[in-house]
Length: 580
Image (cartoon, rainbow, N blue to C red; front, top):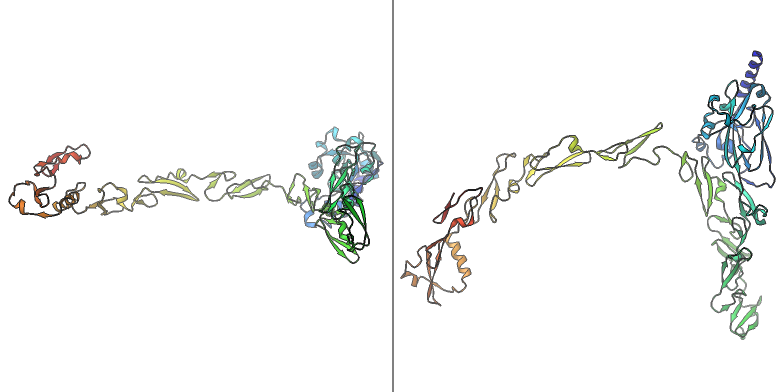
């Protein structure tokens, strides 16, 4: 018994070493639905039908995908040529004779299990396809062949695990959507039920001029029924037992919605139809019977070009310049952009007008599924942070002044560094650090230096006085006030006699002539001031000295009424002064 097991193992090893992984699987990009189920047989062997490259070998589409593309696919691994079945097809597995004594079974596994190959201990009983293992030929029962993609892998009963060497099978089962009812003709007899290699089902590809899911609709305007450059408008019927119709919108001078704009408004006149024959159809219309009309028939007048193509007349008839995405003599064929297989890495292609879109497998993204999905795609890092992909994780390299797993937090340098801006300054966070916003008059990194003491103490000088910086140190602000003429003191002002005299003259506009004549004979008229004579009014006027008032300047002004004293000091009035 030991000798037999040894021989079987040697045979298996010889088969493994002969696996080249260069099998090009036979298949076509487009297949047509067969009305009867097809029987498929898979040879469960390592010596034949083993492919390695998912695209170039297993699906034979290297002309559409470069070798670099297939290198990014996780399903680049040895396997039996994948199958695509119609729903209802029969599938048999024929075992290699040397495997019958070796003992193995097949298990229905996930995509991950298909790639990594299952260990015998990881497979549950309900996943096994056969009750007593694989020997000779077995049919895979229909419950394992429902709509969708299925992954079958070898599970050894004894001996080495051979799944990694290619004993695994990918089977896709497709339904069709080509019949409205079970007894209906496929595609209404006006098209073919086809499936592209990446389509999930079979669909109708209609012949011109038919359309619709089951090719049950016909474009009544496709035959260009409207004459004389009339516009054809299709009318879809709301009832299944009533056919679709059309209507002609005629150009000016033509009529006949039902008769396709073939009649001309008016009655036959001489030369109405040139060299053709004129025929009155009704009291209001006539028709020209060609080919003897005044103009030669131009091929493009019948609007033969379809799908917004441009028609060009030529000596042999006409030619059509097709819009992108269409071809054919009349541009009647919509090019299926999915035929070129633009979707990479197993993506499903969907045809669009002059374009294609792809539905990607979960691990891929991009317009053509050309990018591998990672935790950094799309980037979770905020505020221009850079995402660094790691195994099953990522981290963000943040810009200066940002932190957090996704760079979502602003670094508070003012709090982190315990910054205290002096002299009522305000700490602000900036990119990469902090900055102190200083109060007026202060400067420096922490607002510690005097820049302008007059801005620090703006109320030191009364309005009109000039503040002067006399600081001896950048750390201690000092100022003094330069007073206007007539003012003195730190916060007091005193009028000079001349200034007060000029002010009084401005307020007394009636003083037009001043003379000392009258006042010279009355020297004591103005006790604390000066006497002036008004010649027009023959009167005198006393201009009092500062802090005196009254007609003869005898009343002393209370200097404490202005409350000059600050910080609770008591003011004492004096003659032309105050004390505290």
